[in-house]
Image (tube, rainbow, N blue to C red):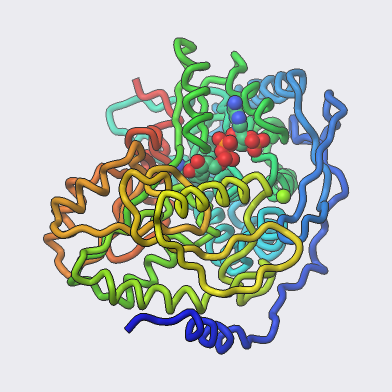
Length: 490
Ligand code: NAP
Ligand code: MG
């Protein structure tokens, strides 16, 4: 039986009767203005330019950060190159000690980091508290363990660090992406110049404080804030020997072009349009939770989000009913409230991109479903959205939306599911829901995706490699594979 809009609204009212549970922010110290972290100190930018970072849930300015120019980038790369001489020769167990120390400091300052991450980026506090920050600490902890075991990790090779790594990260998991990049680089004996995203620089600034607290040798980590231009200067600097980029496929291609012939080692973690495939023998209630987690986690600002739901035709109707009912229980609002499921969209630009793609879905003839929810007056918000009646040619089925928008397609046979799942230029992740182990293996062999989750979705672990096929990029982060990207093994 289909659920009517009125019933859905009634249901929403029932579950929205939670008392507000805002996280305290009185323990947070955000400075009004930040410099650049170069050579172990916070320094004023040569450019003399600053720009604001705002809270996307309130549109209020949180702080100003510096814009690094060519001279600043050069200073940072030189500081990292100087530090490389001693850092790469330091005994590996001493290097490990610094990484363990950083990991413990992240744990000690976890609450503060979670609140700042949520304020700067808009993600629900329960996610930054339970996912972003603990996983960031786990990453440093994990790679600390590898620092003195490189020879065992790569037997019969002579693992040597590469030099200065230039790293550029996006805004969807600011501290976690920083950890994914910095931890393996340091464990392997490299030094780092990292540029966080323009809209979410604050947790990286807190991380700079953590480096100072950990008494990390000066210049081993340098953090330069700025816009795309700063990122392009970092990756192009001749002193940088290895580039690691996470972001859009568009910018990834630009970087690949800029680096061609330079001899720099490059890894690219780019966009995605993952298929989450539900077979008729799947446990449906569990699948509904996985679908919700797959696309509405972090407002869908997730490169590996399960943004295309492929449902076996025989169960499409009951699954849609369950899913719609579940969507009407999601709470959208103050990201600092512990009961919030859907926080703010990271920026106005991202909101406009989502709105444009959703409009295209309606125009192309897909059927839109959005549960009733109250949208706050200020800030950037988008309700959880579900499209049925989607054809593979629609933009919402092809392009990465990077928002809380799910496109539902159906299939009849496993072969058709594979064909539809792989019918995308991307290949970052996929999900399979079925009761049969043999079918999971059969599917996993055929899906062209770097990660295939079975009866779960969006699970991350530092020991497990992550990365893409095709336009989702190349190279792996996490696990022993993530270490190899930062070593000369020839
Ligand atoms: P983006 O525009 O590519 O930005 C990513 C980073 O690159 C930001 O720090 C950005 O600076 C910087 N940048 C921009 N132009 C640059 C240039 N020409 N040279 C060097 N750096 C440059 O991506 P986004 O829109 O912020 O992030 C969302 C995208 O990232 C999505 O497509 C998503 O799928 C992808 N992503 C992939 C993964 C993965 O692991 N595969 C993880 C997360 C996100 P500004 O912030 O100043 O623009
Ligand atoms: Mg911000």
